[in-house]
Length: 366
Image (cartoon, rainbow, N blue to C red; front, side, top):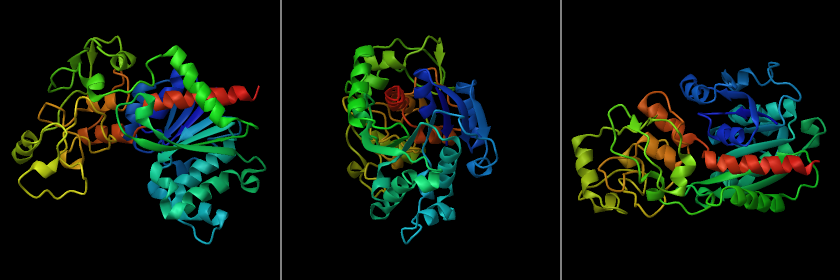
């Protein structure tokens, strides 16, 4: 079962498919620094480091290259073409990222594609962008006579045993006829429960990161003994795990952090904090879940990302745990780049479910 991963990032979406026996034949990532993390964690994949607009019609992708195409075009590229003209939507240069995802699907003609994006895509431009995307992929004329049957859901990662309140839109298209999507969705959950009984259990911050020791200057720590089912799920056999280093803040910021107790935020500070985030300077609670891990999880003003008890923001390893990355997954690059990789990634545990679902859809053909 061959996969192509577009907009691959550090590899969160690929990870779940590889864990389910799929072979990621090719992946595309524009940012060379982020691609370095992907390559070092998935060395077997043919990774293309280039802008997708340079390769989607270059002959690199061919009919039958993959059974499945996965990826999420960044939503910043979406805009309305106007006047409900489908070809116009594709031709609008502001939509080039989506256009090239579409072009690769059209060229390769996979049996299934899986697109992940922000929940807000449903309501962008009063829902017209989402409607346009659904129309394009079901338009036989635009796909050489091979339209896709489309399904979509908004998923809450907390319901997949991930300790954060992240919500994402999943769009799945398939050329396999008469797929009973809702039935396969529930069947997939039942199958995973049989294999991994704790998979969908509610996970707290304590369940996720409670066994991690104090930070180190180089981020390397002795591999801690897992104490919870979630920690066991992410555990590895390495003696040392990495990326457990804290961000250094100014004295003013450190003083603010010390004043905030578990569950509180900037509103308890005796000063005016200018931030667009309502959770600014928020401290996490051990027995709850985190908000969405963003690319600014190392910044107190960026949201509710202060450790439940330590006077610091989350380390990359803690954020990776909350994103459901396994402990042997190492992130490379500068601090800001690593935060970007983790915050933008599809949680591997969600990807694992989507891969199992994809496998069930493929089996429906037989």
